Each structure stands twice: as C-alpha cells, then as structure tokens.
Length: 314
Ligand code: HEC
Ligand SMILES: [Cu+2]
Image (cartoon, rainbow, N blue to C red; front, top):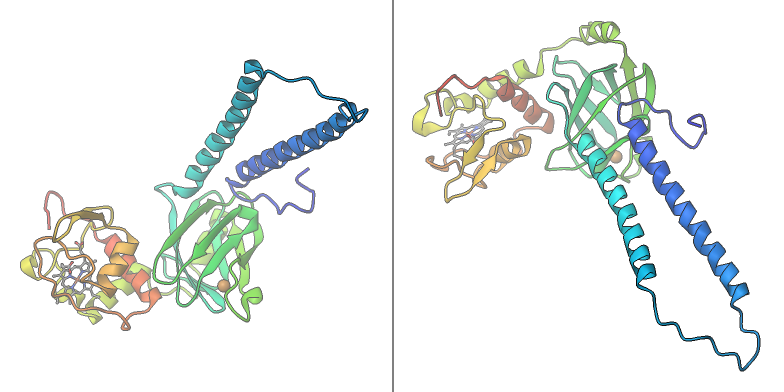
C-alpha cells in the first residue's frame, strides 16, 4: 500500500506514525461521510411525505439515544486527541543525544553548518540511525524546511530559532523543499537530504573540505568581537560567565527568570537590554548589524562547548 504513488517514501522513524494517524483520520472521515449521506438518502425515501394531510407523530425524545450520540463522538475525539498529541510530543522533543546541525534559510537557498565545521548549500548529509536536531533561522523572510520522506516540516523565521529533528532509517537521497512562498525563486529553493551509512558519513564529514569546527570558529569570533573582555570566569561585575549557560534558569533584573536557550542567547547579543541578568549593569553593547546569523550560530556552538565549572556559580 505504501507503493501508492500519492505517498512519499517513509524514510524516518516518525514517518510510519504520521501516516497511520493520517490514514486513520481519512478513513474515519470517509466512513462518516458515507454513513451520513447514505442515511440522508434512505431517510428521504422512507420518510417522504405521502399525502398533503400527512402529519408525523410527535417524538418525545430518547435519553439512550442522546447519551449514545454524545459518548461515541467524545470517545472518537479523545482517541484522535491522545494519538495526535503523543505523536506531536514525540516529534517536538528531540532526543538528548541528537547530532546538532544548523540551518540558515535565505532567498533562495539553504545554508547548512555541521558541528565538525563542514558546510553545504542545498544539501544535507546525515548518517542513518542517528537522531539529527536542526536549529534553524532565516536571514530574510519566512521559509519552511520540508522533507516529505521524513514527514517533517518546520517554518524557518527571521529573528528567531525554530528546531526540528528526525532520525533517518534508509540510505538514499530525499527531496528537500521550501514550503513557504518566499519570493520569485521560491519554487527553486530546494535540494536534497543525503542519508549515508555511518562509515560513509564519517568519511564524508572528515572529507577534504573540512574546515574548523563550529565551536572553534565561535571561539575566534568571541575574541574578535571582544566578548571575552567582559565574559570570562570570575569577571565579576563586568559580565556573567557563559560557561554552562544553556539550560540554566537565569534570574533577571526587575524580577522574573528566563531559561537560557538559543533564542535567549541571540536576543542577549543583538538586544542586550531586553533582558538584563540580575546583579549586573546594562553595559553590554549591542552587536546588531555586526554579526551574521551563521556567526551567531557559531558563537552558540562555542558557548555550548564551555562546560560549567564544578560547584562554581557565576
Ligand atoms: C562591555 C562588556 C560586555 C561585552 C563586550 C559583551 N558582554 Fe555580554 N554581557 C555583559 C553584561 C554586563 C551582561 C549581564 C547584563 C545583561 O544581561 O545585559 C551580559 C550578558 C550576556 C549574556 C546573557 C548571559 C546570562 O548569564 O544570562 C550573553 C549570552 C552575552 N552577554 C553574550 C555576549 C557575547 C556573545 C558577546 C560578544 C559578541 C558579549 N556578550 C559581549 C557584558 C558584556
Ligand atoms: Cu524559501
């Protein structure tokens, strides 16, 4: 049945689950559509008015019937809800051991950075059987990262990060599309995901075009932009240490807290006054216009690589 050409190949761990839910919904809808139309026709014939003075009998109502047609739809809707929600959560939460890949969309291409430093355009190489987490942003307008064979589609927005994850189950090449109309050459904004078996992937990622790792690039950038003047362990008043930042709950000046994730990091660099860390002065300059989306992602990779010193706060 999966050979039916309307369905793209199933090439990720989530694909089967998505298709089952989809088919269930289509089947359910078809069943009730047929049932309702049949009943309309049958009743129209059986209960047609046979003469001008025919008056139907008054109906008193039936509790049993009322309960029946309330409970049955309720049960069906709850099945759809729990099934849909559990699939949604499975799809929304990436496994902790996922490989991190950065994606930057721009008119009209996909730019991809691997943690080891390899970059590619309109192609994404990944190994089979390993979860891959995409952190995505756009340099201009809204795009959408869509790989039908993996059953994943996630909007890619300027000014913030979105994530998606998948685990490929088949070697081969799969279409990658932009699924959000983004300008003249939107229809050409696509490419392919190349799924390799793990040894082939290791060879690919260690190939000739090997650059510096993202974290190393980020470390250089951290010095060039003079972040390290204020951010080093024990900088005290000058600035908080960024080691172990991601996942930390940061207390803010003026009350409240924020969980440090990629979006918080981005905002802290581009608009430092938006959220000031409690106990610090708002002295950090903005880096708006001095740093590209890709460089920001490199800085994130670098800060991620800094492990929090044991037992020491900021
Ligand atoms: C002039 C000193 C200074 C420089 C330069 C500076 N920062 Fe900051 N930074 C601060 C201070 C002070 C804070 C805390 C107050 C605040 O949140 O604005 C801070 C906060 C942050 C935070 C939030 C940290 C937390 O614990 O929640 C991040 C992330 C950050 N800076 C990253 C950077 C990066 C990346 C650079 C370089 C591109 C940089 N900073 C350059 C002084 C600086
Ligand atoms: Cu696009």
